[in-house]
Length: 591
Image 1 (tube, rainbow, N blue to C red):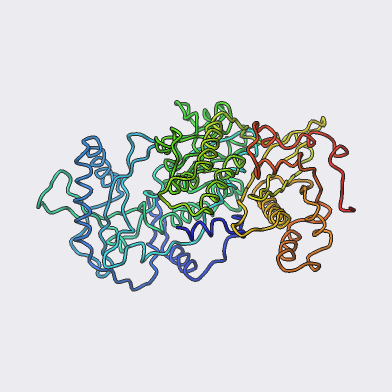
Image 2: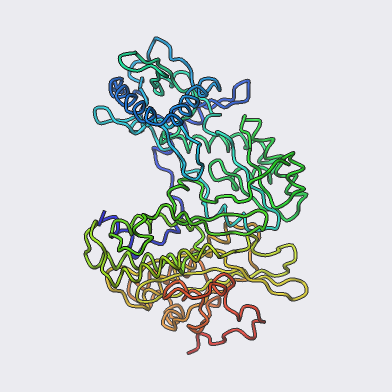
């Protein structure tokens, strides 16, 4: 765990990286999907498991699966309500055609029995999910050990959310039971066997079933499901490109979120996205929008959810999350304080392990809470620097800082951020402003849109931010400022790529005259550390796009030092952006 933390605090960890090139295992997975995927007469797609090797030999794991069945039975038998709901779920698997009675004949070397257990989502009380444990091992191997992860087809979550913030009309829905709608070809189903005996116990022999659909828990399932979703939309790439892009670019696994310039366009696209999904037997449910007209057009007039989690996966594990309130069309921070141990909430000193667990559970994909989350990272690093044991309470001075931070975290629940950045339909010019800064303990970048409408009115909004704690090895502030500049230019490139509308101009702001001097002199003038980073900056920006800003007006400073009392400047950018460019800080590179 110490080594994981060392990597976490490494100076090169910018977290804005291009997707790695496809390797041989990825290509094999793609080939399997291409060769085995077919559409059945009823509309469902059928595909094969992504086997690492064509001739797989799996050990007999029946006894281990039986032991796990008994463990699951004991667990559900202690709770009558859980037992009844689990039985209903197991029965539904067969009734819905997601599973079937296994035949007497078993596929040689490819028969595997999946342990299963209930998973309860704390965010959805009373709802359970049956999960098949594809990671369970027998003789040192599991089903997942024999499967490929598959190609990385997942859209960038920050990108999906940023596009969701582009336009005035917003819509959200999710594909109901997406995995289960995708069928596994019969010759692979024996690898998905499981045991179940209902109310029988003792020496009663269980009945053997096997899944006919993708399972939760298999390492290959996410990539397979996204491939099928995308494959089904492929036929509309040329004839309906906007619908095609909505399916490809504005889904995060089974969640669909998108924004539109007008209600009519939202209606047209959303209806077609629903139709395209239905062709594959995918059904979009839980429609939510800030447009009642859209919901009426979709015949979704029943009571809708007012607040949508933008957590996606593992939302119950998050202390801090992001919500969309469709009535007010605002983003808010969701605090799941139940995740915090009772003694920590009552000002007791936490242990190093507890601090780590909480810091790692802060979900802020756009960095909107960076001034608060950075402080937690800095505290964690200082705890690690002091060599505190994992289960030892932190020092009293750090506990005082921890309690201050906890109050700042709780105050986030009062923050309300407009979902829509700007009214693009009124904007005649659009600028992208990137601010970068560093302190002894952290470096950060914050990016803002600045739009001007036909009447000259200016609107600004935080797009995305990112902060990193300084490395454990002492590094000079100018070098950290340079790191921040690298991070800012990479983020700006990502922002431009992920948005539909592109900025007319870009500006980069730093309060470091040293960094500006390095940029002016160019990469060839310096030793490798500085030279390599200047070269990276030059790949994504030009010298005349860089400006100097006084420290007090550098909004990125809010994410590197003490948490500001008021976050209004953080969300809206420095006050000078509201004025004409003639009134902006004017010092240039001639010093």
